[in-house]
Length: 315
Ligand code: MN
Ligand code: MN
Image 1 (cartoon, helix red, strand yellow):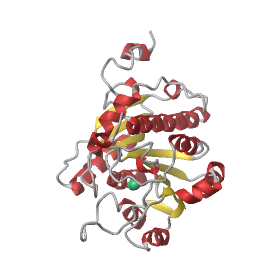
Image 2: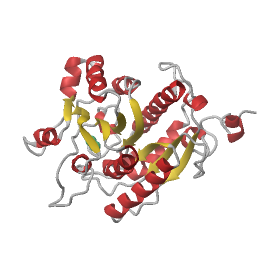
Image 3: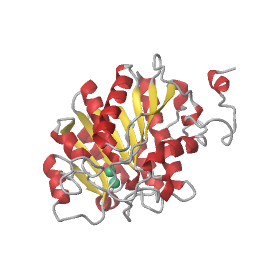
Image 4: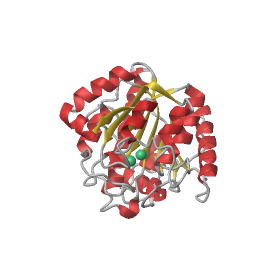
């Protein structure tokens, strides 16, 4: 009996306890290569909440992932020992306290030598995740998929922490190398004419959804590749980078986004980067329909694992 069979991988998708890809639920990190961590925090959303239920739903939809990636030619779990860490214990009533808890638990996972794949939660969680990663790796190159730059100074009359502000703080705290920070998929109406300019002034290279459409996936990926070089790269995936037709279950949908297929192509195109961390955020099951947003998130997580497996194979 293989290890996976012993753990119940022979079960059908509708049976059993839904850990991520049916891998062991454990906080024993010794020997693990990658750790899936739920971050069920949505206190930072500016509009409709619900992404605290994201991690659980993504796990459920991950049970449909059979294991072999035919495009990348790899079965990630053949090369990576994955544990499902469960969820961070973060209080929903105090975002700063939640961030402190997220950073501490993420740091412990990284110190154990695991690569982290975090399932949000709203995008504010990327700030404590980046703090933990930067402490281990130094300032990071970042590939950030989103409809929104998330570089506001504050929201709701002066509150600095929300899902609209994490990347401003990350840049100002020196967690991100401004020479290697790309935002892909930006679009929609903004609060003012300055939103994009403000993000650019902080160091973001904004590739809008329109620019991406005009240039095509390969050209955008070539630019990303050139800008990232051999730096250590953190990938942050706001599911609202997808069009609401593909990802309605999210808090601040914007029309005119990527299809599921395009997002898969973008993620697969990161294969030659030196990847050190991942998050997928803003999946809000109460606004989803037929779980289409959660199944996209689960599949993007699988692509991330596939990239990591290829990296691992190459040593
Ligand atoms: Mn975002
Ligand atoms: Mn967004």
